[in-house]
Amino acid sequence: MKYSLNLPSLSNLEKKYVLDVIKTGWLSSNGTHTQIFEKKFSRLINRKHSLAVQNGTAALHLALKSLNCKPNDKVIIPNYTCVSNISSVAQCNAIPIIVEVEKETLGLDYNLVKKAIDKYKPKILQLVHVYGHPAKDTVKIIKLCKTKGVKVIEDASEALGATLNKKKIGSFGEISVFSIRSEKMIGVGEGGMISTNNNKIYQKISLLASRNAPYRKKKHPYWKKYFHLGEGYNYLLPHLLGAVGRAQIERFSKDMLIRKKQVGNFYKKIFKNKDYSLTQKIIKNSSPVFWLNSLFFKNLNKKEVIKLAHLLEKKGIEIRSGFWPMSDLKGFKSIYVKDKEKISKELFEKTLVLPSNVNLKYKDIIKFKKEIEKNIPKK
Ligand SMILES: Cc1ncc(COP(=O)(O)O)c(C=O)c1O
Image (cartoon, rainbow, N blue to C red; front, top):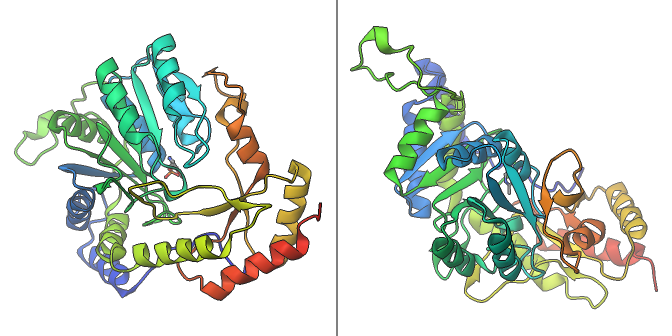
């Protein structure tokens, strides 16, 4: 496609660090570049510890495990999000409690969360920031969870660099997780990051991610190295990707973040139309990163939206649909907290996600608008 949804941004710095890894021959996990990457990542989001892992889904799984998520425990997740939020809960044989999102930022709705906590007494809640916008009720939900003894995993996979009340997204939850696959705010191909201020949780995550083998340091005797405490995973990020990650985090604030915000601001300026509008609002005291920009066609039906998407794709404009609501994914055992407003279903049927890559120019977004106006059914 001529206009991609998202593109990785690579430079000579990534090349330099990757070549360095090849020269040294240390391809496995825990290499120096990865360690520097983790430290710089922590600094960026104001957290004490970060651990680089193989993907965001693994990060969610580890986060749940580190909070002792057991079979039949209940975990609140939003209805409008990536499948990894529900599948990570399924991986623990726990029960996802699906709660509807609010209309402005597409984050979890506080009032519905409150009801769900009172009714289902969950152990954990996954709070997701969708498409780079800080979830509107973040502070209220975190406070509520604290008083009710519910642990919060903040999923900032789509919002690295965003802030709410001047505080970094990814520094609100007990644990925060990030996807760093190629099309995210930073990308290494396939990768993830887990961050926390809690030393005990960090130790537990590190252990679980490296096969739950506690005696792997140089100082330990060789005959203890194959002792394992129990179920564990092989989730650590390989050093080649850690090297890419280091370069990405070093370039992020002065390059990709600025260009991403610029593209988001172009969208904001160009799409002010009464029949369709940008799906999300910028709420007070928030600084979104516009990972993806999308339009909500309130006056079109599902068929018309699909037809419009096909016409745009013919013009080289890559389109992504909204998320399939978690409550409609029948392959998962879950409890859906019914709400009279079916926000996620409407979002799925009437949203088109448009190209948001860092290379887009003002004139490109103008072109998208022209193509939409030319092809949108007149009512
Ligand atoms: C909100 C959210 N959580 C989790 C994930 C899973 O990350 P990964 O694809 O790296 O497994 C993604 C995206 O891919 C995501 O958007």
